[in-house]
Length: 483
Ligand code: UDP
Image (tube, rainbow, N blue to C red):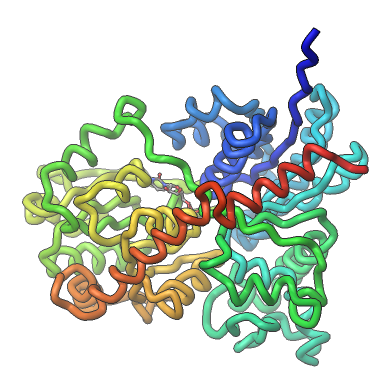
């Protein structure tokens, strides 16, 4: 009788937020498709149905993966307004730990490995109890990973007692961190909880069996070298680093897309490379004044655009809350300048709240992306050869923007963007023209650079490529399990 080998079973844990869930699902899909693993994904959320409805392609993952939405975490007792987003996420994950433990205990066979993203490091204790291998999946880039690993040690190294984050910060062997906002670390110097939470993550990560990173060897060679060098970042962690990216969700077939008719149909009727796509991630919002300036900047530039727009509200780790909106006769939401929709109807499309982003960026009419530089958005832009205008808002987006507009040279950057500042319409207009108008020098250069990166990304993921090989190595370890 033929013996059917038992499939290797692994578990992944996704922190709250679509930006965390998307790369975790995609990593799970690669293990299932390329390595025929059984894959269970635990999703921590405060609202499972909202998370599912934001994933128009959710069903394509559900057929391949065992996706377990954990009971929603109750956060009603938290004073979220005064907490840093990072600390909110840490607390939320802490509250989910008993559910994760209970669910892992039910799984048959017990997974050989637990892979968590940045905020899930407290689950390693559970992995130890179940004799599972422990992996971190760093859903962003290697530079931010280096900062996280270095952060608990930077005071010893730089001899600055009680200084949380002084700039420039010389992360050994990496590009120094100069002015980028990082998780509010610099803007909340007295927030002890935030600084302790972040330092603990760095220390916990240094004890795992491997760190998977959503980057590839050719994108960040210097940082990856430093992370592996025992005289540089390797002093703080000797954990193997596996660049497995870019992991982004694939473009969906037309029939899976609810929004097809609106955005993609409109793009179908535009000339190739002519449209600026404007979006600030899954929950990013701008102030009321900034929305007005951006609307004017777009209009004055005369360029074609698709703008995914949200009302001006605070966004939190638990979602964004919007006030009831009114609209004027031409369909302009009340938070945009009067008559904006009718004046720009010939060249622009305003989409409220959500667009099928990977499909939009893959569309040949899209010529550039004005983005908050979330790492998923960044990778989605790169793999489609779309240059960017950086407008970082929070988390590690300032670092991403510095990298994209700095040595990678695939983006231009609005320099005045920052907490409490409002970028004026003329600056926005100028930046859009510089990138979109075909004979403008900065536009030509960034377009050439991003096409080269697109080619590199494809090669890294292909069979024989560096990211493909990294995933194979991790899969092999998961098959063998703890010895
Ligand atoms: N996204 C989307 N449609 C939208 C806004 C966002 O599909 O209208 C997706 C986007 O493609 C990306 C993710 O949501 O995969 C956002 O992740 P990112 O890391 O860019 O930013 P975050 O939302 O975490 O700030």
